[in-house]
Amino acid sequence: MKKELRLMKGNEALAEAAIRAGCDGYFGYPITPQSEVLEYLSKEAYKRTGMIVLQAESEVASINMVYGAAGTGKKIIISSSSPGISLMQEGISYIACAELPCLIVNVMRGGPGLGTIQPSQGDYFQAVKGGGHGDYKLIVLAPSTVQEMVDFVPLSFELAFKYRNPVMILADGALGQMMEKVELFEPIPRKTNIEEWATVGKPKNRERNIITSLHIEPDKMEEINRKLQAKYREIEKNEVRYEMINCDDADVIIVAFGLVARISSKAAELARPKGLKVGVFRPITLYPFPYDKLNELADNVKGMLVTEMNAGQMLEDVKLAVNGKTEVNFYGRMGGVVPSPEEILTQLEEKFSGELV
Amino acid sequence: MTDNKLHEEKHFEEMIAEENICVEENLVYDRPKTLIDIPMHYCPGCGHGVAHRLIAEVIDELGIQDKTIGVAPVGCSVFAYNYLDIDMTEAAHGRASAVATGIKRMLPDKYVFSYQGDGDLAAIGTGETIHTCNRGENILIVFINNGIYGMTGGQMAPTTLVGMKSTTSPEGRIPEMMGNPLKITELIAQLPGVYYCARVAVNTPNNVRKAKKAILKGFQYQDHKKGLSFVEVVSNCPSNWKMTPVEANKWLEENMLPYYPLGELKVPENQGGK
Image (cartoon, rainbow over all chains, first blue to last red):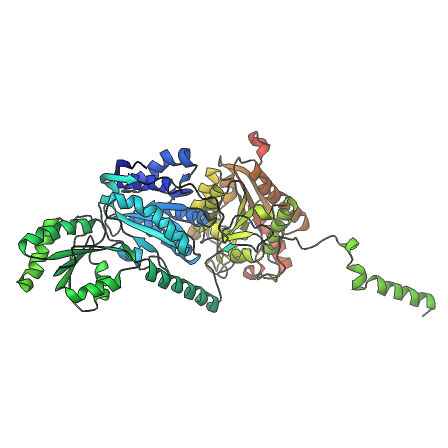
């Protein structure tokens, strides 16, 4: 089959992927830098596949529309950016507890507060540690290219339905706004099967389906929690994804996700001629986090440098992973500032040159 | 006692024996099929039980049990799904109409309703309520207004009357300090997306009958696909009003209904509909 190649903005590519993935519904609210998702879908989705696109009155309403719609067993997507995602946290917690599949996209911008519309990775903690109240986990995928903004959409739905769990694509403002060549996959027809747990109207031959996160008896609530935790252990066992670039002979490994991993690859490339053997380790699933692989790598390196567009959030997971086996340094830019490869190279030289000579 | 009298008495005893009364031909009132046969958690005299029953009766009469999805709120009726034998979703506080929107948009040919109290619908969920109504989602919103927060123990609601005591208006609601009771149904009725809007009550048999008619319309009108149906049910809260059920229904009549007058605020006929 002929490949369909296009030059697309990250946000638009993701929206196109949603249509092609056979999405049934999108509920959103405009916020920079991800409004193109809503705009693109408003223009394209309904006329092409009958996919419902609804601009809600707020992020709070939109995530609750997702809760209702996902409960019917359909493929539902929602997107926003940092402050909007903060508003959704209560709803996300409900969705996670009620075990509803859906895809939540966060095109991160700088914070805290109203912050800036420039790219950031400041919502790592919120995405991977829970965000809302209670013990729950999202499966979190971090794309680093516009191509992955496309590819992770069908993957997200596959994981969401496999585990009946919300999945988050954690991108950033630069990935949302930049244009790159993408290869688009063949459209997947919309779902026709009815999930056995979905609220679609109770036929005579089954008990009523109830979607709820309310279990007032502590024993019952603990049982639900145990069930969720067992599912998360299963996800941790099966779904860890990462990419390693020139890690085999590396003395130093940069650990970075998303866009920063690409910038870090350039820095690693610049370091090699200077005699620094640097590799890049890129977690693709931020939850489940590749703890074991990083721990293994820690045996063979002289140190690691975590680079992020935040004040050091994934840093904590890297430290947990290596568990003191090797030195872990950090370099971060905040508030919407994107680090350059040269900056990261300087950090490598300052932190590791002495030790490696 | 004469033989005759003894005979009469025996005959009377037979007449009132349970096995002679509880026979099919005497049955005029039964539990609707859609109402699950378990004890409700509601307090004695609470209007929720009546309102639940009306919904169940309507679902039975329309034969739409397999096509109905309900949305329960946060509040006393958070467990509504325990009593209705239909698919249901329990929403976050105030968001029931957004959840119902999501369901209805995915299943436009099914019957969808939300069941919400005054705190849920008219305080924390006001934004969702107004916008769901204004978008004209083809759903039914059943709004139970008893002027108080029941589940959390009797705090002031957006609909608490002026002068009415609650745990957070211990001297009675003072408008200068606490704002005014919100007639949200009057606001809703003005919205173009609203197809049918009524205020009913469940304090007397006659009002219960009218309430059922309004709820019935709210389900039937979903077939028209012309907008939202909104039914406010003025109800009571004997426990938090600190009254007996009888006193509460009398108090409702004398105090709630003058401020929240009953009737149909908007009917399809007035909009050229049918």
